[in-house]
Length: 184
Image (cartoon, rainbow, N blue to C red; front, top):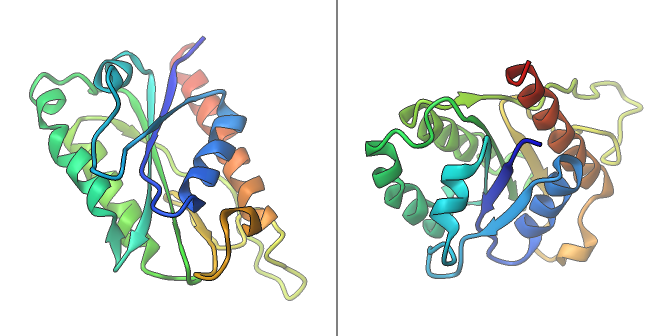
């Protein structure tokens, strides 16, 4: 069985909810970055043992949270040792607006993965683009390079759009599918 680790920071619980949906689809383990930008004890070892690492962060002011950035900066030791080389990588983000510059956050995660020599996968799902499309549809936000979800700023994590959470679960399934291609 492949080991998938979903390493994420969540400021208000929304990104955690997305991480849980990705885990439900992938069978992956959740690894939360705390409010101070640190991993729990054993977290770095968990990432080293993973076959796939999925990055998650809210988008704040057009980029990842400072806590995620602190984690990324701290990954220089695994980078130096090439510990994540050839692991599968993917990423996701959530923000309060339909655009919210989420692409900048996913691009940051992509760049991080490429510096580590990882193999990136996007979501592999078409976006609905007809007049009949609704926010309940899979990939309604239209992300391709990574998973992008939207939660209004005055909505709790329990009020997240079901279509976004279904997309997150399908994204987890996609990660398993792509990882399977490497295990042949």
